[in-house]
Length: 324
Image (tube, rainbow, N blue to C red; front, side, top):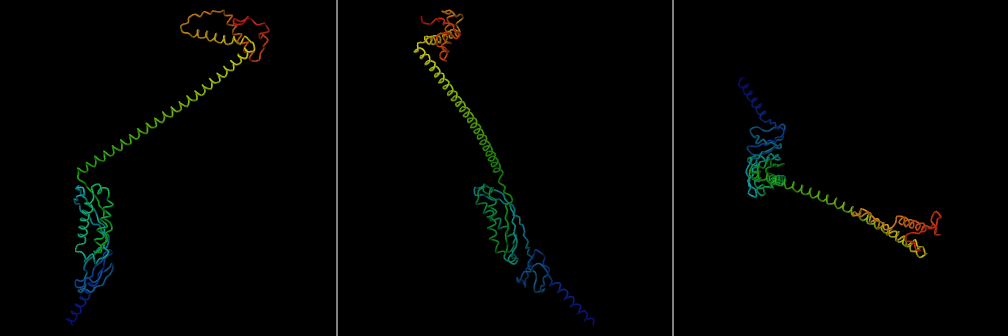
């Protein structure tokens, strides 16, 4: 009996071990490959999985989540023979666990070396200025090349990013001098454009001022010409009136011209800076009489009395230039 109980206990223990060995729990985010005597048979997805122990076993545990792989820094020679240092990162995810496990020996090392070599190829075909200014183009080219190369491995490359590009120190100093020169050039151009605009505005102001002055002089000339024209018309009208009076037999009309020149000459004597004393060759009463004759002539021209008497009814007094 004791031997029978021992055999049953042993079988029960084997059954328990067999059950526990056949139960496999796959964690979320992972896929397990199941092998039958070393040959891949299927892929176990997350959850509870039952396999036949001793005949089947878990081959590889593949991470199906998106992963990040750092690209170590490396020296690259650009197209224009400039030495630069660069590094980056790669984002990828496994789409097919069986291919990732059995199509490539070391997936991480393979992706790292693939990105490194293609990074050298892409950046080595560009000038230094292009490598510094066209990071998006570098990333796009690397993504296209690496993603196409890793497709047989069941891997999807989602992003390739160049983190840092470090030129040599002498090139950095030269770039700093170039940037400073460019900024000084732009500042000089802006100052020159400002001075040019200021001069243009100043010239425009002077031009407008001269135009306004010219217009003012033109208006003044027009007014002066109009005044001279009116003065000439008045003088012509007065001359016509005197001529008509002379033609009518009025002797006082002659006195008008003589008195006008007489008064003008006396005025010139008075305005002379060298004249201290003025001696009149005639009596003052004669000058007054002459002026009176001009007044009578004006009254006659305006329609006054033509009878030969003055405004107060007295007979005319003889003027210095009247005829006998």
